[in-house]
Image 1: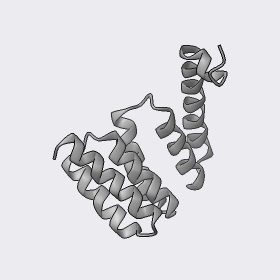
Image 2 (image 1 turned 135 degrees about the horizontal axis):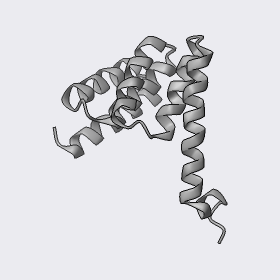
Image 3 (image 1 turned 30 degrees about the vertical axis):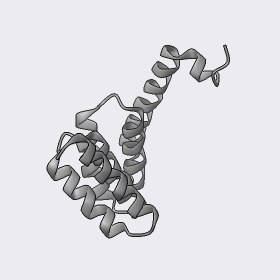
Image 4 (image 1 turned 180 degrees about the horizontal axis):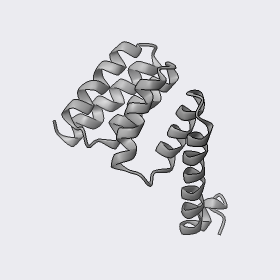
Length: 120
């Protein structure tokens, strides 16, 4: 599967989910993660859809796979925090929430104009 085909598959899955077809979305994301197990975007989308469906164990597995690929991503750390909170593990939720906050601060330091809303 080419990178373009993978991106299209992820986008199609996201569209399916927004249109109410969670089964089609999950099937497409399963194909995406099977074909490209290194795809952060596919794993993150799978985590978010499972989270929205309140399938927290499946969301956790997908989020952990995404996190293993890109540990310094603000959004996957936030996703993991949300999942752990729903699973009732406040210390783990706080751990990933703190990591997300640190990553946010780092981003603000790297991009001070963006943090101010683009004002120069």
